[in-house]
Length: 227
Image (cartoon, rainbow, N blue to C red; front, top):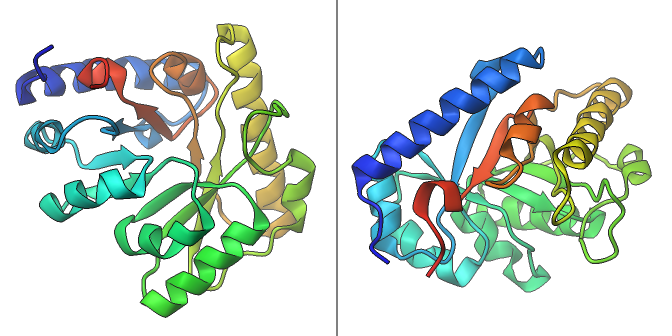
């Protein structure tokens, strides 16, 4: 399968963004706040470069060792980490990524905070919440969010979740709507702004947009199936 051209990526991105923003607005949300994180994991550097040529500025990766050569080749991109973070990779994640979506425990938040101080870098982070309480998924329990203490050396900017595999649109919307409600309650209880909701992928992006997503993680719909 041939890699998509920059023009193909641009057309796919713009059409999808227009559709998702229209859905967001119809749901009563500010459509301008919805942005796409183009997920280049399992695609070669050439595809990431084509995405940059297409005008995309936010790219997502889920494996540190795969991402590092891409980041070195394309340092002007805003790189987002969206995968599971092994504790021994925390320093490398802090060094490489401007935004970290997948902070799935209090211990990891503290570790990243320490590494940020040591590296003198200030990444933006989101807490991953296991809204559906799936045993197979990582993430903080919803009732554990109120115990979170904001980090000193990182900017806590929002929440992230993943809907259950194969969920219907109604089921996905229920998960995403609950994340938004959790965010709203946490903002009020902690007195901090949490503007970002990272939720939705290619299969459930429309459900996420309807429930107020601000960051939607899209790979297949932009780049085709992974290598």
